[in-house]
Image (cartoon, rainbow, N blue to C red):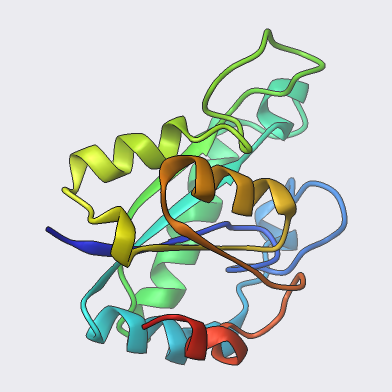
Length: 161
């Protein structure tokens, strides 16, 4: 079985803007997380992104724009040896769609990744900057680690065994 660190996107991998990141120009990768994520990867953890992207449902940005942001994020992290095994995102918003199970604090996206990549939940973590991230992780059976928005992951590495 594999072990994984699930990661929220906004405020964890890229700068939190307080609302939605709607353009590639506003998308700022958090360079201080290159080294700790490389270390986690070198320790055998799969790195998997799980993010709510309700701005899609609101029409604030397009799937094409989101894919450009994710491509840029993958590129910048890859330059430092970091590979995201997959990026899962929920494109729903409760004000614009009926309820879904993929939007955090729902755990469907984590459960899909756990099944797809044969992940040992007991050896896995979810790092997020919102309570809904931690709740989603715990519903899926992984340990949640709450950080402040834009906080360096290096500051919580001691919590990952």
